[in-house]
Image (tube, rainbow, N blue to C red; front, side, top):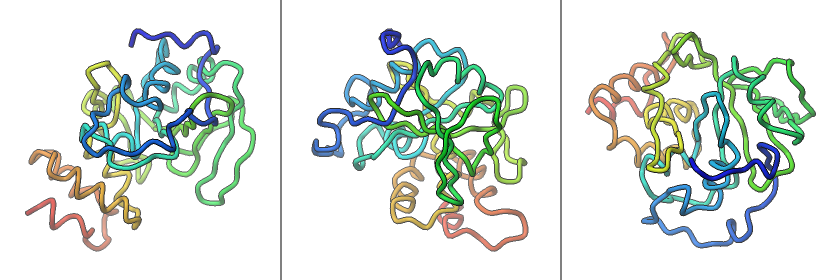
Length: 225
């Protein structure tokens, strides 16, 4: 990415993008950093970051599909837990908050306090776009899913990129994160993304939708059809 963000001193979040929330969603609009203010600003905020990172969540759904499917209240990104010190150094002077998804608590956070992958996320306060940072385990060149720590993928297989180089999560990984939810939007995202999966991706996801010893997941039949 060629755009520079250093005038802002690094990464920051929790402020509206002018006109972003009010603009109409065009389901056929190409999702590229140059097209959408939120993704463009995230790319600028991470420019020069020496660690690994990916757009996740709803925007990763749209990037995989190549179109906007709905309005988004923020942008989820994922970084590696082992690179938190690097991330903090890149984030500049902005405040970091820890959000606990189980209790709903939000409080100030500072490195080197650990962040529990899956349960806790980081919010960066004071910049141009709302950004929630998910923290992922890793082992060497492999990403490790937080549930059970058994599911792994090479970092390269985890990664997709836009024409401008913006990294985002592969569709089977996006759906793995969404598989425990019962929200209508998760079901919509599955119906949209499942046709993009090849046989290997479908098999990989179907085998990991639920913990060992539990009943079948409602998505499994569709993936194995």
